Length: 484
Image: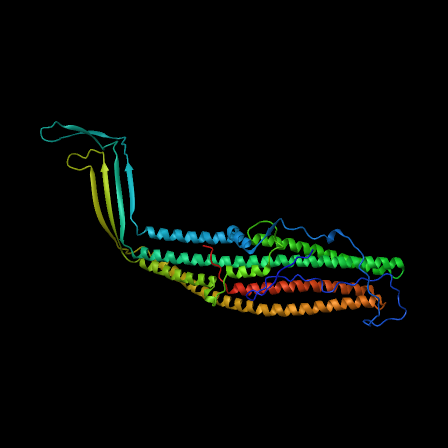
């Protein structure tokens, strides 16, 4: 049974392939009709009696292709699956987390650090030495160097003045914005791919249906040709030509079914499932179009598109990276405090536990030119980012223009396909009429039938192209938030 789809104008886009019946059902030939001795003008009123019903035919290839093991029941299912299982979105979100980690690393440079160490030295080569103690005390023996004692210290460091570190924190936050914009653009392209894949499945199913209609018609023609030959009003050439037509129709069914399987697999990959995924019959495609537009609302300017915004943000980050290197030439001021203790015998004049506070001013003087090299590299990267932004603007400008023009081109191609289908249907009708009247040949009959089948398939494909063009125009100026 043919699939029935719901339609309706939704924000200028109809995300559906029109499921229309065969424009002109092939009128079967009447094997019992008498062969007129005088040709009857084609199209004359009352020239031929009404054609009888087509003969029954049966063939395994007329069975519709099996349904996919998994079907999308709604647009929200497609969006949920793509966001949860898409490796591209997962990679983009990982980049966001990576940018956040880099910001945290930059923040650590201005926060205090605490380090502790414990040591236990043991000396293998020692010497006993007698030393005098306090007056009146007998000499005592010590081991030199001392062995088997503990040393421990805790050091606290705090950056007081570090302009480069403060600047790096802000740079990290700008880099996070760039990563989030890139993730949004990934969602936009993924959503467009899912929507296109959904329509591709519908189109492939329609083509597979048309191929079976064409095969059934070819089988009916072959049956009629066989009957006419049995009645003596046909020739063996008519039967062979009908068989040839059936073979051509079978080839179309085989290729169409493979195209359907591939389109289902493409939809599966788009939503992150490594198997064939179909579209449920209950889905209303106009509702899917409205949901898609709500998922990715339209924007007014190409500068708001996420890929352009992300590229522009990368220019900001590149400029700040130049500033980071420039600030590495500035001195830094740190405060350091150390608490140390030991179990070693230091004599009676030294305390075993000490605590000090130190201010450390670091002035970079010369590092062999490493900072100058890093500065040149950062400036070159900034220039590259600027050029990439300009190139991205140009590309998106042309892409938007092409997407909008693509609708007009697809509509014109669809009109041409409709006219061609009507003409092919009329040629097929007149060819059958002439053949019944004895004015045509079986070759003309087969050619007309094949042309009609091709015109039907071409019309379905042009309908798909129009839907795809409208989708591309929609997503050319859209943003898809909600990934982060």
